[in-house]
Image (cartoon, rainbow, N blue to C red; front, top):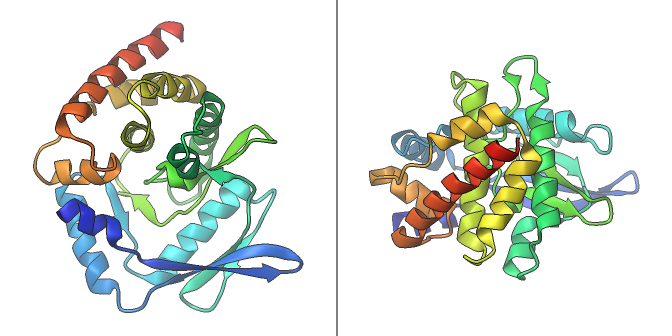
Amino acid sequence: MLARWIDRVRINTVEPSWREGRRIFIKRRLPYLAPVLLAGNVFLRLSRSRIRMFVGAGEWAAWERTSFELLHGAEGSAGPVGRDALYTTELPGIPLLRLAGEGELRAAAVRAAGVELARAHGLATPARGPWSHGDPHLANFLYDEAAGRARLVDFETRHEPDLPAIDRHADDLLVFLLDLLGRCPEASWPELAREFLSAYGAQPAIERLRGRLVFPRGLERTLWACRTNHLSSERLRGGLRRLASALDGVAASG
């Protein structure tokens, strides 16, 4: 019940608009959310999530803008809209979540996601060093089939500041793979996971991921329920075993 309540919480609104002849999205923090965000951060800490939400709208908007410009500055822009909002230009592509929901998530799309996440992890910010997303689930990847590439969006959380980059990168991999596990047929999930990991290709982060494949307990199990679309414990255990085998296959091919 707690996991399903968490799934329903929304902290921002998104409004389409136009700017200089190009479609944009205006993201605005909902008012009076500070107590909810503070409570959410307590849950995230106790559930060993390794991420935090931004309590201040200004800090969130600054991080969202920094991340968008770092990853997509060559093809779009982001900027402030008042004190508690920002705009980002529209990027091409369809959310991987939509493709999964329609039964159309294919190897090419998850390979593109792996390539894009590796590219993003190779970038850095002056203040934090190597970049990481914090919550790269399927809805936060847009797949542009015509270009054969994916793009990351929605930078609403951030990893804990003292977490080493390799752990942040492994955590990003885990978040994507858990969402993939919860939304794809059991027959196709292992191959899609292998395609994603092979495309990502960075062995140190993949090796660090191996240590995270432990069935969670307590509040961490609640967090993983959210991250796996409320997958049963039986299927989650089986998925972790198959993911460990996929890691072995990627290591052998690398």
